Image (cartoon, rainbow, N blue to C red; front, top):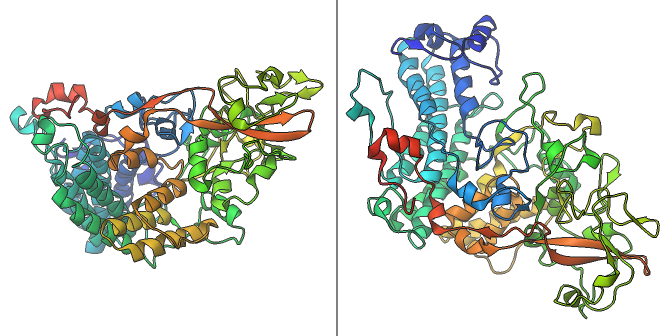
Length: 607
């Protein structure tokens, strides 16, 4: 492999035949001399395409358990179902914490090969062009290592291409590096990327500000591990030797690096504010390809066979082309925005509504743009969520949810939408059913990323093409705010959070301001963006938040004799119980890798 590059032949040949191609969704080639790849613009871009395609971006296809980054359509296996953002019949916390054996050292070797050989064979390019491409490689290498470090802590740092059989087995069986050294290595690579790359880039490729954004994310993670991992940990050899854990003394330095990196993006990106309607503005933020907030995206298309199934699998068949949904927003997530919804009167009796859509009146626009509430519409159809019918209802909500519900003899539930009571459908076309997992079990559906512009016939499996936004400016601001609080810079944190809240249509914060204020804002702004699972882990609170926890639904009922609706706060019907053990903060080093390289021992604590 010294003088030859082994990549897939078909696509790189296509790239060489079309030197103007800029599409990174292409396949690479097989057995082509290094000089043929690294000496041509098309060859370099084809090589980079293979690296970008392998980046561990936790996108529409990603699952934290099972298939990992492999392409699947079952988006209801969302990491949010591991940690309480969503609930459904799938997504075991244990399976998620065990991971899927991610070990991308083959991809890291591909990057290292590029870093070593581009300067050798790319002598016909300008220094600026070589630096720009090398900057992308350093960015990608840091991205791979970040995905490893947040799972395993200390892992081997490989800076140079390993050669077999030229190198001995002893040389190839490298030891783990300390966790603190891995995070510093990630930060250094991103500094190199920032210093080498230009300020702008082609779509779906990194520029210097993408490197700064990733650095803010990674250094914040490291700072959290140093601070909170020093307070809540599992003892063991890996921790004693520095492979699982960072000294608390390093926390401030990492938080400062996170803040500094986030600050670099100021003036270069901005929060999305194209529309005056703040609810629709927030909806379109995730659909507008030209959003001022997008830093790094991943694109999909029907022609390349990369289209995904978000529209088909996050709403129900009633509104899609034969899709299905199995993951539904929890009431606890909604209550982060609102506190308890106004569904109970001062005397404890359920508040009566003329229709279910009245529930959403006066709620924060960002919440309504993130979650479909009862009574809202999509593609000309209404979300008519209804759990059942009460013939009549007396007394308090608490009594009805207690041991001897007084109105239970007068309650009617159903498994099918065609089941009637006195000529009325008992449940809505969008749920809530007693025996159909494909309809909401919480009274809500995901709205974020749903493309309301697509016709129902276009919302089948593998038909959705909206881009995944891997990094956006709001996250960078949240990284900055959190780092600022950790550094006791409350004024900066408040200003940043209020900028986000203003865009969201939420009132500005004027009262007490703590780390929990910032964390809660992060949970709301980044809901369903596959961040919360990792946030709970780096904050070291998952074993408390997910301690034998069950989540709730808000169940709409029709009261027949009053011709009114009520909502009851009940446990969701799946009755799933969530648990998280302290050992889950680190995943076990994959067993197959331990078998090949005993120097990867000791394994992470309690694994």
